[in-house]
Image (cartoon, rainbow, N blue to C red; front, side, top):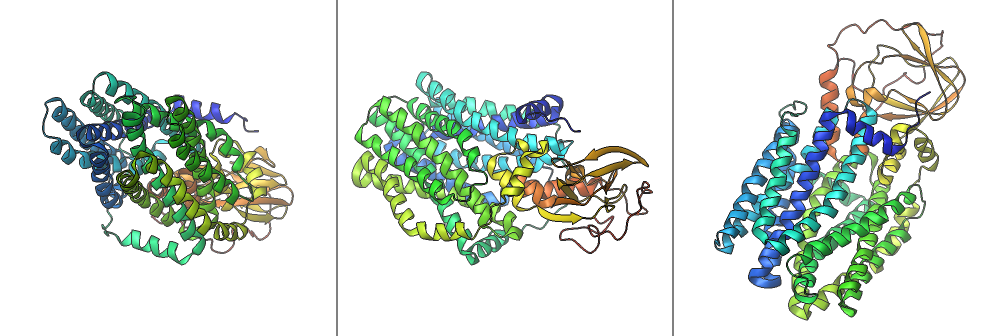
Length: 572
């Protein structure tokens, strides 16, 4: 029987025993710290030199080039070793951040910093896709892959909480130059951590500028529910862009918190999101999420609007924590609904399109805040998100209900996955995403489900019945509900190491490799990287090892006929 360790113990154990995973995760934490630190420091620097207009321009000169170059730079991890792409991104960040810090310290014209800012953001754009593509090549077991997903989420949340606070302290005590230098130091530390972890070699691929994005957009546009939920997600990203700029205006000009204030207020929003994170786990498997989505939007935008009514530090901190809570619920509910609505064969493209739209949403949010401040002052900037949310909900409420009504919620599959250690620690949207892609398979007693030496490309979860595991002719284990088998092949692409036979009539749920990795990581680059790693580790084409003896069986309904996504034996 497999050991039923808790999710927390599994994640910590993976980080402790796998040095490469630990280094890559710590490097990602440094990247997140540098990203948030330089973003806040540059916004504050620009606000010092030109108020809201300059701060808005600083945000746009970072976001717009990143949005344009992001798809190309993110694709580097598909054509080069992802660890080396991470190193390149770190080098770009260190050079631009250090250059900005030196320019500020030496009193260079602000225009110099405005020129360096987009280079910094372009370097950051390489980080997430390369990180996602690197993870499958440093984990050793599927359990470590699930643990790495959770660990990455923890590290990102910690970076969003700690980095703004530290940046705020540095801005308050030493100024933007030191804060920018600290961000450069974090980027350098990240580069050192991933040094020597190159990742799997990628096959050279042609660079098709914009073709993939156009195809993904066309798929999304043809599906009304997907189109609607991507629009809702775009509003969420716009709201995030508004918050970043509003935090600077509030802290410096309204609350009088000084240059460190934007960092403290940003950390308050992150803390609220972290608190709500535990509650969002309860959303998994809920049949009705449209109401939850609306509640999250309303809570976040109305709490921000109330800051205009009570513009005190204590009230702002409390209300911004509510903003973070509502935003977290909004994001998780929206992502879960998007996974339910998106066509299963287009999920990778939809995820990729969502990433491309993130920077677009941030840019829209920055422009909206700037216009609102010019027209009606800071109070207008606080109220505008609520007004936009009201319009959005009026237009989207009934379509959201229709999209929700047409989606199947895999409650039985979710309960099954929660009983299996390899999936237990997954975040809610990822768990439901895996459950939605399980395919029921009924096998009669005596059926050979998998044979030792065969190519492995599918995972099976046992929902009912009893199966026996044979290795080299010996019975070595018995499987029942809450067990699974075949998972190693999903990550490493090696032949089956055992034969599994149904002792009784059994009900299994099958999951192919690519959707498993894609939903698990939430990033198409990781799915492509895992496939490449698996292909590289396949043995040369030729006779398979002799299968272990197993009880006699009739026709094999599980293995007969082609299956979607299955490679011919030995194919590369």
